[in-house]
Image (cartoon, rainbow, N blue to C red; front, side, top):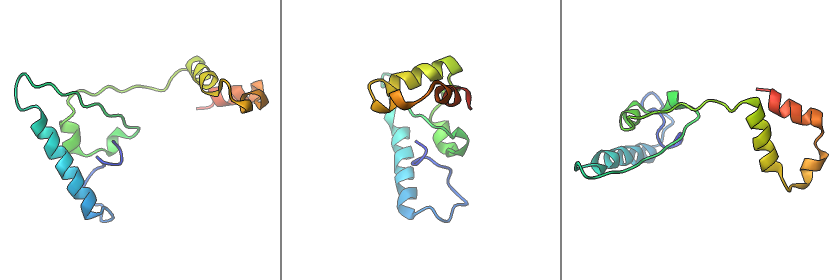
Length: 103
């Protein structure tokens, strides 16, 4: 959602079409849950929540901050992603340690 819901104002480089799309999107979010029985799940993810538009953040009442995975989890993620790739066999244990232990 970073590309669509970035903060407005003060950015003269933002194209008018982008502003219009953002306005339409936010207006659409307002009209989604018009009745008590209406349920809509809108899920978004951002690496930079501090750069999101305040109006957009108001429309997402629940926020969950997910931290970086631990070092063991990072190793498992890399092992899983690299499984079956030819390059995995050329990476030394020292390389793996650098990838995992460097933040």
